[in-house]
Image (cartoon, rainbow, N blue to C red; front, side, top):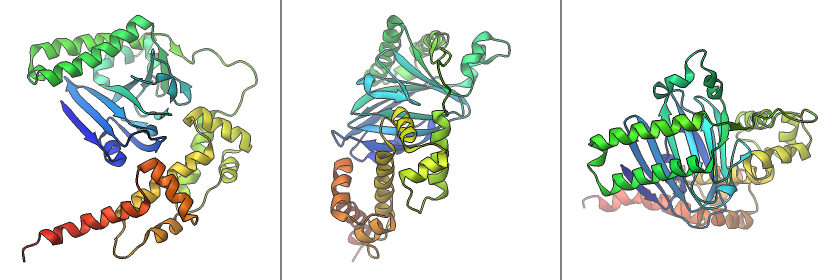
Length: 325
């Protein structure tokens, strides 16, 4: 089992595994994050503890299913715009686009199950195979099953932490089989969102979000505003705002602001500290109100842009200080 603690959000997000994704931090309460990871006979378990809310969006791996469940502040979570609660599990099929959003600091756990362990579900003609089509689904478990599932994972991690020999013991084989049985029960639960839509059909939220992403990726070095996103998605700005709030839990203006904050942070960290200034980096990213930007940056990352660049300079200069005279 591996346990790591971080005071840097980017380092934490790089450590989280089992999907291809990007994380955006929001509403930080503490500049502290940790992740615990364990492999249990092919099943990957990880638990995160985050001192912030965040938006995690990306695509699942092609060779397995990912199950996500919040441990704290479940009501502040959503999966592809579907609100979660303390008995909800988000099930992400292979190669599925997803967005997991949380508004505040929280704990969570996820389980990645290779497809080879789920053959009974995906076999042709199996009625339950319909639940495994490539998409993100939210399943509300009965409370007893939800409590068993949550307690099982927490107990597994605690046992592995207290007894290093556990993962190579026969007990771990038994535990893996019991966990597979629990996952079997979860997959056959009725899933949220199966009720046919009522009323007038609307443009699918996912299509709106996809069009916005395509525009942002195609014009990554240009200024993109809310109007540009609405035009690209073929909707009015009110519909755009509704789609973003349903999908991310925040409006498009705040989403664009978070993207810029993270892009600037990456640029500051990658910059040659002898050749660029904070102002140069901000101007390249369309920011000219330096004071206001610095305040937003500090609220999110716990430091000023100049401190990020100074840290980069210190890292660059350190080897010279250690060189023999």
